[in-house]
Length: 95
Figure 1 (tube, rainbow, N blue to C red):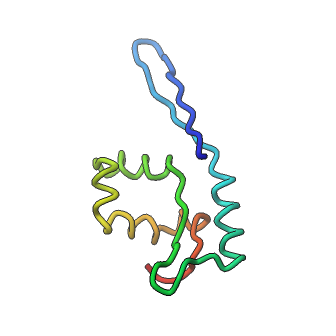
Figure 2 (figure 1 turned 90 degrees about the vertical axis):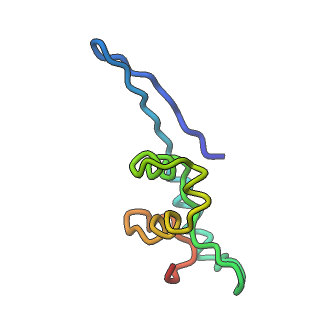
């Protein structure tokens, strides 16, 4: 399970929400699955396992809801092609 920690930070007259997640276990699991050849089948590839916090950040940065992210393959493809998220890739093929 991917636990996201949430803190509320108060500074002067403002409050900020700080959300964090340790993504190291997710990256390590993806690396092991890649090494083991657990890329899915020839019909359905397992491209990546992306931490929840990364999806949340993408949605916030692009002004979309999680539902919009799930329903629009362009958003998912954009994340899978992002070199910064390569640590979470399982199947190395082109998206």
